[in-house]
Length: 162
Image (cartoon, rainbow, N blue to C red; front, side, top):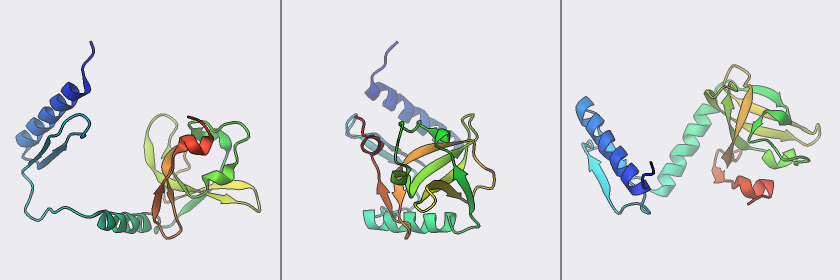
């Protein structure tokens, strides 16, 4: 049975509104513009306000600074732990400061970290506040600068694929 994106999103939005109303929770539903022109907002407290792109960027930087401000763990990373797998002969220096999800290798994620390439040693390290060493790393599409600003990264361009 195939269901259109519009019908699926509409059904999920109705379900979320119903569950939220039943539990007395505030609910905000946004439907992607390419599917619908609708945007439904319900039960928002009066103190909730829109924020600008700049405000969201500052909040994101502050949150990253707090998250990576706690005692950090450093682990040496082998090229075989990445999901998706790295292409053969991939230059690991391109992964420097890329955010990654830390996984137990069975589908559960314990946090995030970022990769640090050491050119002198030719090694890649994971920097993360997560206490336990991960079994796998899920490559993210965000690079974090030393001042905790973030930049989007297209992994297809990074790996040279379409």
